[in-house]
Image (cartoon, rainbow, N blue to C red; front, side, top):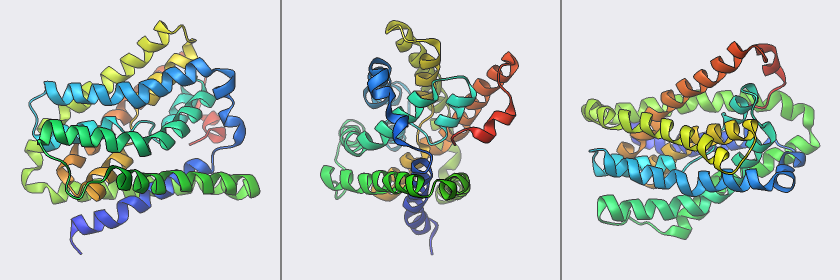
Length: 296
């Protein structure tokens, strides 16, 4: 089987398991911030769902990149709330409940927002529409691989909490390992032009990460949110769902070049996460043992 065909087959399954793992870490009380701290939820959701894609369009326009890479940047920016953001927010003394809420909300809303921004990106950068592209068909596919697995995970968590607690970490870790395999597959598929694609996507990926994290802190300051909420929003909009972006590019758009920005962004956001964590650990107020009780 060709690498592209294998990627096309495996990528959606990986995301389904990631979303299942996230669902198994959720309980209904995780959504209390919607009522208790609605301002923080509204600010964070707006930054994720609207400002992030606009920043993506800005970066894709400013940097001299190919149309495919430009669309890939927008796709990446339209996929907020990486599955690991909850863990990073917890370790970094952020608002863990707000982080979980924002991740869950973004997982629901992206079924609508991603197709719209992708269609706009194709119109702007490719001067065309995606082949066999239908907005609602696209939305339904994204919905099916994100929302039902989260719901199933929450049901498992409710009826079999011990099983869910034991399973969520292996499920997520396994999915991440397979995701790395998909990224390798993308690189293999584009190996003849990989150097050029990486050189195009590298600086935009770093810029996207720095801009979004900075914008998270700025927005929190403007809306007078507390320090923990500001840190959480910065993490939530700085850590993209690279897995979803890769799946959109390789499976729905059938274009591995458009997956390059997400593949490049993965180590960039891991580095940013590491810097957040190191800063917190140096601060001396949290330590590694707390990871045992964290939500991954």
